[in-house]
Amino acid sequence: MAALDLLWKDSHLADGSVQEQGGNLVRNYGGSYEFRRGKGHNSRQFEPDYNDVGWSQSLVGVVHTHPYTNRDNDGASFSSSDLASISAEEESQTLNILRSGDMTFVVARTKEFDKIVARYEADNNANGLYRAMYDCYENVFAATEGTYKEKIEVAVRRVCQEFHLEYYEGRGATLTRVTGTDVP
Image (cartoon, rainbow, N blue to C red; front, side):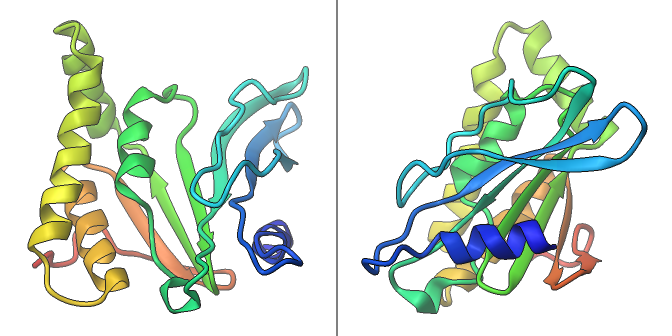
């Protein structure tokens, strides 16, 4: 949790601008976990370095922040491209972790999702899955009434439900499983 808190703090620059921050969650050879911080890129994107793992480490997840210049949007969950990009990640990278405001969001791959990936790959259509996930999110977002954060939440839940991803959210160290709850 301390790493997430520091990333969030560093997402707000001294000049008042914002910059996404992030890094990799890795598993050490002995079974412990470590966070390897990456470099922030810009206000709209953190580009993970999937190869930033040590000699005896394996990549478990990618972590990033979503800061907003309009602080009313802090606490918003994953973007359409965040979720769709999971389709191109390695099976061994099972977690995507996001911090926005005091909220933490986690999406985890499932065996069912990996089967969907395999079907698209067997059809030589890996980009098709990205497009399907992205379009699902964007269509739900556009059709949903409510605040920016509410629309994002509905879109994330629908993509996770449709594509068999596990979704968790919470504050502090307490996360609650959201996948499987009713999606409007």
